Image (cartoon, rainbow, N blue to C red; front, side, top):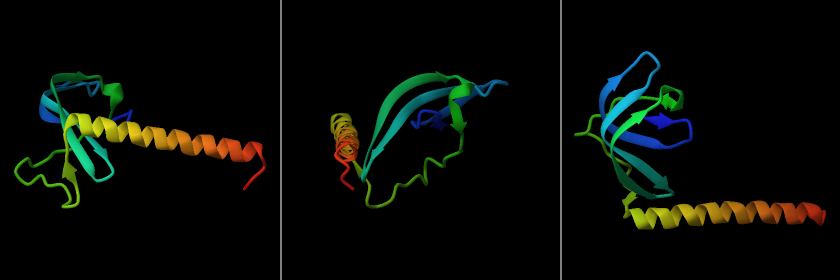
Length: 104
C-alpha cells in the first residue's frame, strides 16, 4: 500500500469500507533509502481512505527485492534517512547562497 505521504505499508488486508479505509494486520512500513531497506513492524493498523493512494496484492512467497538491495536494522535506516535529509537541506542551502551571490 502506498500512502499519500509516500510511505509504503505491507500487511494482511483484513477489512475495508466504502471510503477505502483499510485494516491491515501484521503491518510493517518498508523504508527504502538508496540500496538499503528495512521493514519496521507496526502491528494492527487502521488507515483512513483519504490517505490511501495505491493498494496492490503481493505474493509473499515470490516477493523478492532486487539483488542489490540490502536489509539493515531500524537504527541504520533511520541514520540513512537523516543523512539523506541533511544532504538535501545542504544542497538547497548552497543553491540559495549561490543565487544571492549571483553565481551560476
